[in-house]
Image (cartoon, rainbow, N blue to C red; front, side, top):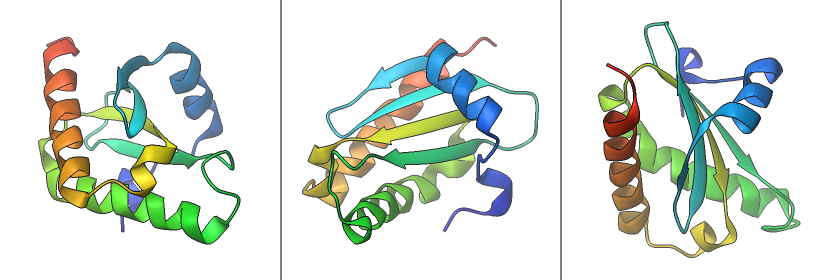
Length: 114
C-alpha cells in the first residue's frame, strides 16, 4: 500500500496531469507525469471499466502495479504521476510489470529538467 504522502488525490492536479503531463507509453500502462517542488513523488492509478466491469478485478490489477512500483519508489524524483492501466496488465507476469516500471524510471530521469 502506498503511504499517504505518496498518494495523489487532488482532482485539479489530476486534470492538469491528464492534459499537460509528459507521457510514457508501455504495453501495460500509460504514465503521465510532471515535476513538482515537494519532497516525495506522488502517484495515482486509473483502471477504467473497459478493462473489466468487475471492481474486484480492477482493484487486483491496481494492487499488482502498485506492488511493482513500491520497492522502487525511493528512486523516483519529485514528480506527480498518473498511471492509466490497460487490459494487458491483467494477465502480465509480475516480473514484466517490474521491468516496465524500470524503463519508466529511466525515461523520467532522462527527460526531467535538472
